Length: 565
Image (cartoon, rainbow, N blue to C red; front, top):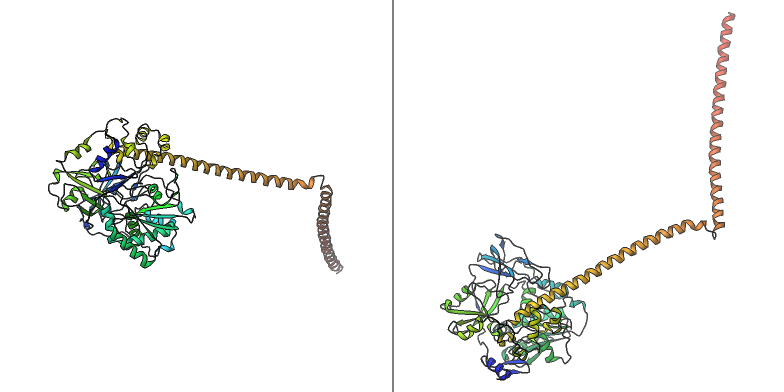
């Protein structure tokens, strides 16, 4: 059987067909855009996701009272996201477990027991965001648990230039990504229809941050209602937004594929979209940014799509982050959940079990409920992966024209340089290579860990380089201070010795004579002062002698008179 026919059989299960490395969807769409809000459970479990090489710092302890929207973690790393309390209540427990469907690392779980009062944490509203610069707004948005530089679909592990606002280039382009796939389109459709003005407001905020020359709103041709609504709003208010309509895409294409649709210039693979002054954000991120800036509301809820043959009707739910799956299924009236199989993000080809004890995290977007009688899907999930046989199926199906088998070998053998040379960061983690692999190898998981390890290595190299530059800069400053002090000392010595040189001989003699002359004057003054003092003392002594002599004469005269009598 030819490889193309084999791939065609695989995608016929989902009624798909291939066209120019993009997967076009025929008819897979959830028509229900209604949203069902799930009430608060008895306990919420908040997963603190840690990146490799850095950890989030927990700000709360067991027994503390937390408010709704209060930050419970902080991090100095630009990659980590701050978590907030979904509701008010008490911290009942903090445990450390390995979550199989998250990152397979030891991660902290914070247990919150709600008090059902929903007391909000202090909220700082920004009514006029035009008064603030981009740097302040980016840090403000990040404190609400939103990273505007990370793509929510497809490009989660791409290095981003965080200091983009230093570049004053006027040729920036901003893409609003409204493209969807079946497991995500209910959320996007709901936001586009029910919160159209909020999306426009979020786009205006990002225009103020990015300051782009052009803004393109990319949307699929089957969303006719959304296109009409956006066109009416843009024409009424005369916003600087241009709508681009493209065919219905099944696959969540990366920023490079979006750029190729509108820009003919080839983007260098080592650079990211933000380094090229091209910015892409999806609808959910834009809506969250508007809520953070205007309403001061962090990310504490998640919109889930619950589908599959285990339920009668697809349901869109607005769930608090940390809600358990069994509580969620009980609220949507699923009968006998014990006989059901739960698979997370099945339509993205990430076949992962989640049990009823699992809970909703920021990364879960859809849950597929399947009957256990459907053994074909269960067997695909339960298979243990074997060694690679170099069949080439993954190479043929890769939409980014990569070599997944080579990247897999470099990832397991820790050959980071070769993995980077073979463009591992160009992988958009679609999961197609893992889906068609006959050895059932979870290739995407290996790529994720390899990307994280390469990022840590690059960060360490950059840190060492920066520290070396700082050390050399300080060393140069110290050397310059030492040289300055030495030069200053030498100038003083030369200044003191300049009068003793042969060149200034006569000047030195003249100054010597002046010095002697003034010394003589001072000595003469002292001598005259002393002589005057001596003469005055002699006169005083002679005066006393005359008085005494006269007194003696009078006494002698009296005695002579007495003797005569």
